[in-house]
Image 1 (cartoon, rainbow, N blue to C red):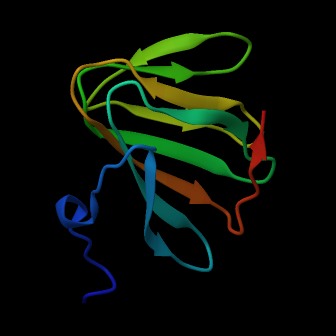
Image 2 (tube, rainbow, N blue to C red; image 1 turned 120 degrees about the vertical axis):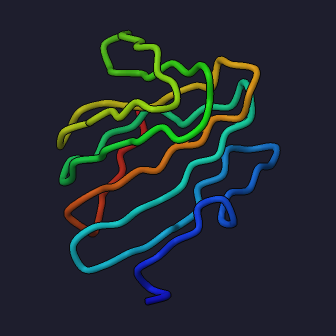
Length: 114
């Protein structure tokens, strides 16, 4: 059962740079926990071969970069989908820590920084 249950609170960690923590990786999908202090951001990028869903677990204010200069406010309790090839990234604009889990498939996931 240990490979099916994940204590995200125990996995979370924060540092001077945004933290990406691997939660799981199977032959079909992967999950990663992102932990951002106020002001930190996930770089603008896209996955030319995979969908990426972000589920916001903690944080009062973030800006989701949806490409073409579009910025969408996000917060705890929201989920955001980046379909294959869609540009995305985010910045923690709040005063609290921001935590989200990203689920991407299929693997291996290619990343193109923009």
